[in-house]
Length: 405
Image 1 (cartoon, one colour):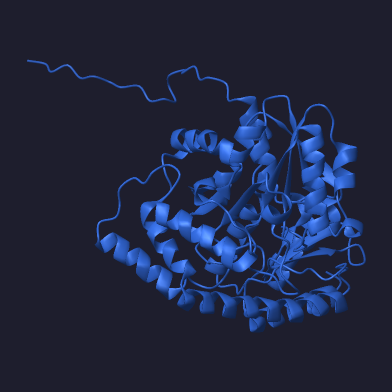
Image 2 (cartoon, one colour):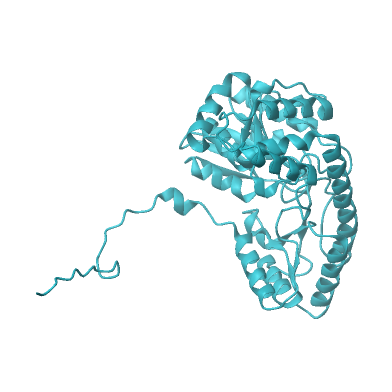
């Protein structure tokens, strides 16, 4: 008896109609630094020694008390869902942080825990920006912010900022750029990629502009705590109706735990919570229990020691890069970035970044990720590696430039 066999055609043999991808998915741009990082990893796999100054991730591991709190949460079986707004004890701890460190009283009910600051920014923009509306963003600025705006089908409107405004969006610049379709303004302080701070006067002025024009204000404070020349202005003290976003990734060193928070006006809490319920269900439960340990005195001592290490790195790298011919205006006072004008050294930052990686073993990020106005003129240096490695990088860059690279 013959047994019938069934031949299954491969996908390559069958014409399968596929839906078109959304226009939104094409508008969202890749994070170009990840391509550069992948190439750096390839070179390392081949035996090259690379000094990493491209990624905005602290090189310190999560502090021991926080790791231990996370382990204990797992040991205790704390792995189920939390309320969408977050663990109540963590919301209260964050409110205490605002009172103790900033002198600002915040109702814990206005604080919502999110899957990283990215989750908070996406929710904030979903709350404020309808399709066809525009959102003002400083240029240069954090690249994902443009893509968050695109994700909600609004239009990112780049507003050129420069050394004259300390690379911050000012009330005057915002007033000149907004129109009847403007839904929101999004600023970062300390800023990425420039490390500059928004002044209290500018935050108050942006809030007043928003009230006059019916425009929302989102303030990204994820680098708060990493400041070196005086504390940055706290947005909630000067713009109490702003949506303020923060994260456990930078000062608190919990990058891979993916945990952040947002503070919203009291009457917007149900809307934010509804969006969190639908988009994320809730943030990681073990991460939330771990984050409770961030507010202990033992952890604070660790964080402050690390902040001092970052200050020392900045104080070494800033004059060293200037001596090599990079132009860095002002005195970047926060985060862990230096945004350098390369005009005196070349005419294309992407080419310079490629040459430094391939020939000098130094990975830095070209301006393409951060701005639309003059990306070819700028490089971002992240001082997220120790001073000895920074010194190695400076020496390598010096040799590369001297050789006519």
